[in-house]
Amino acid sequence: MNTVELIRKKRFGGELTEQEIRDFIKGVTTGEIADYQISAMLMAICMAGMSDRETLALTLAMEKSGQILSLKDIPGVKADKHSTGGVGDTTTLILVPLVAACGVKMAKMSGRGLGFTGGTLDKLESIPGFRVELPIEDFKRQVREIGCAVVGQNADLAPADKVLYALRDVTGTVDCMPLIVSSILSKKLAAGCDVVVLDVKYGSGALAGDARQAKELAEFMVRLGSMSGRKFSALVTGMEQPLGAYVGNALEVEEAIQVLSGQAQGDLKTVALELGAYILRNAGAVKSVQEGRALLNRKLNSGEGLKKLAAMIQAQGGDPRVVYDTSLLPKAQTKLEVKSFKSGYLSQVATNRIGEAAKLLGAGREKKTDVIDPAVGIIVKKRIGDAVEVGDVLCQVFANPASDADGALHLLNGAFTVSAEKPEIPPLIEYVVE
Image (tube, rainbow, N blue to C red):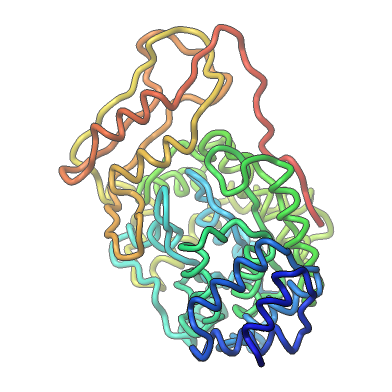
């Protein structure tokens, strides 16, 4: 393979063959192709685009660049869920145990967060003793026996993606649609699940700025995922305000427990159950999304979802008592408040500012080596459309000595807009893509 000619071909809009893509990914994985040439190809793809056939070939080549996890020895349908990320997005901790309680196996491999707050793994690690690194056989055994597990991404799965993503991050090609799709799907396919439901976010706290961009990404991923032979669906959901009220790692675990124990309602519960309902329908456990929603609510109301979460925590070395006593979770030393200076209605929330504030407190990381403080974070006390009086608390801030509390408060004081007129409530689920 002549790498220079391959770069030129794509740069001038040529369509790469499956063999050319496989050879390129092989060179990426083995290190035979230099970083500067990989970067040039990424930029060429970003500028010229890729057809569905090329993107599928890229996805499958990346999937096959390392170990492919077989879950065939686990009885039943195996399912997974992926979110493009947001603020206060704790749906995994709710839907994984609930779906498992409905009889569908949830074999989830997750990553760590880069950005506003920690990823699902960071949230789970705020539970005392919880282990996210499990040998593959232990992971499979847990899914087989308990019905669910959430563990760290195996380093041998789709190793080409790690090389490409590291270079995308420093070459301004992160937002390229074919590269986003192949990155997400290659890891999901390599992880071996039969059913995948995607939560594609848009808004000020999300990767996609508007619903149209998010729908385009969702359609692309569902189309390519279905071409791979798996069952894919996607929900396009709004991130114009934090999904849950709690932002921060231990805080988000606490809110998930509140939802599963029936103490909390709202948007977080709604989206978690909707995603779970599509998983159940696609897995054949129910005939319709409506039936799936009803079954999930029954498992929630009976307490079976909460018990399943406790069983998963115990199986992975954590303290299962946290589901009945959240005071066992890490707690910050200082609580501060951001109050409203005017009366009216909350009309707008700069979700990205809330996420950045949480990161300044220590809830997120700029680079992978940064250490997260599990205790810090923010509780948002008002939702868009709520009436607000002067002096009302808009959010509470939980900080530790290492937190940049002043910086966080500066951001939060400009994150909430109060207007005289009551605003329209932004849609929560904008589109469903099948």
